[in-house]
Image (cartoon, rainbow, N blue to C red; front, side, top):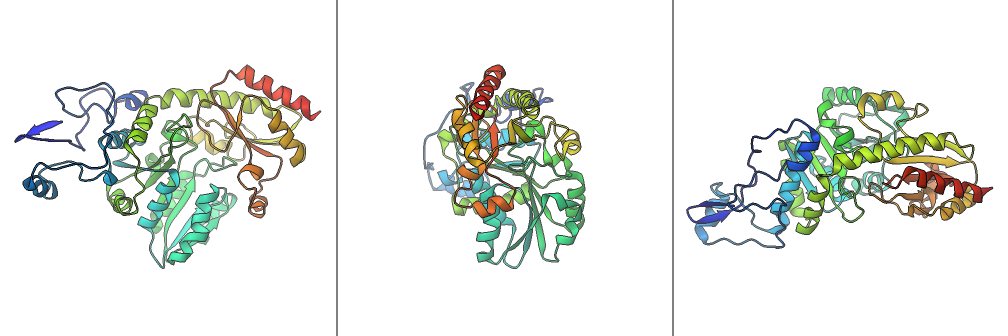
Length: 410
């Protein structure tokens, strides 16, 4: 806190102190948290558990609106803990700004609504999160915004899907659930030439494995519920990019209200400090498990970007610093026996999240697409397909657990 004419207020946008911030591990620890010039500073950024902030007098209100006094008027516009996390994320992603939302879907939907208008057209790649696709195809048409799904295997013909009214391109990297990797440089060259905003959902990669803005993307999105939160205990979403675009997105967030609360902001801020360490374990464990699964006769196919058998292995090697902690694979059995395999595993929880210390597994067609099987089949999600989120358990214990479950199939 600072004292100015007897007024105590928070400075929200002070530059980092002069410390060595060359490496991402240091950025994860210190960015956003060492820049408030308070007399008494705690090592841990505190939680301000309040919904409202007050002014000492009417003059403070005038100073606030006229830019002479920084601060926060109301909790729906943010809190100091949230702003610290936003600064840290913008430094990790190497962007001008970042905004945090109450969930990944709040981040996605608010951003699209802020950047696309009635009569305009957006493009998105196939093999994306089911509810993101639903928002594009089922919700946006009600607002007069059209969308086109571009098959992930046909991106080389992206220009043929463009229209005069196209304004935005959206893709995950890697995608869900087949972990496809797009040729980011080629895609961005096309979007820049046509004046489209390029949005990359990098939830599966995190800024440890790729920073899309460094390749020219305008916006990067995350479901921070996953790796950024990293403990299966919070919901949050992230949008990072240049200030001009994020100013537009913030206006929509302020009205639509998809804000994160102070305590969740604290949990996210805590988790971001260990992100480089956690991703190193996720990357290493998943690579080893994926290689082991690929050599099992019970396994029909494995999708993991770190395997040479993956259709985008070359692109993954080009763009990714690590291949993440999610493995998708199919078994050489039917849906019923695949369920039996899942039920026989003892270590992973049967759950649809990913990115935490505990391993999770889901039979995608059953857990996520139980009431939407037609869509699942259209996307190649069969009853014998599994998505495994690698945790921090000892690899030998994980492989022994798989081995026991394979014996049950026999």
